[in-house]
Length: 329
Image: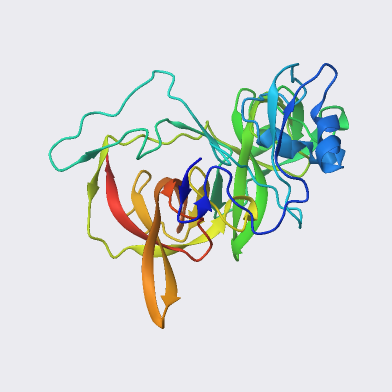
């Protein structure tokens, strides 16, 4: 367990006592996430929290005896949190096992300690200027929640540019950042199997969270991020602040993603690194303390999604970020 500055990062200390403390559950024959949710939370419908907390579960309908499930704490007020290693999105390992190139003169090499190390993103948040064009209007067998392997129907077909074989990204709307701009979470991908004139039937082939009616979709290939070879340190005055924490949590930490109010037209790009600071008053003097470092995963308009590479204490909305290293490709 890593303890820095009085903050327990591996468990992420909560200021409010959880209504149900975190636990480990060993799956027994006949167990379902539905029943396990009721056992720990007193509510069957909170099963997606357990699914999200165990990233190895590809299909929530398929869990097996002797598997050990992490049961996240469920704080008062209905806020769920993913504790332990990993984060609110998972970065898939590069299937080719690639490692960073050696650093050249004046450049810090990118590695698994100081950078994301793969090219695919799962379940990340981003700010979109426009609402995704399509909507999920029905789910397989009219179930409230569906996931990998299930079918959905979208409210668009060939008349709106959707064709058989197209890939769509599935989104859940989270929170409005400002007028006309909202945070959306990528919850999975689906393939159009039959496109009609006005509707399309699609199969979810990868999901990172449950999908329901009303979720949005956009025609796109799987979203990837290019991995840098290294970084060059710079003295920059490009600065902003953290404006959103994943799933509207009160705080965040290493391994999680946040949204910052920095993007285009500023000269920043995916892979660039930012230091995170907090201002506080001590004996009547305002001090600025470095508390972490992040790396841009997605730049969308004037906002960016930043992965927290490291942190010495909890990260909060309003914390300051400043460009410190530019990615070299």
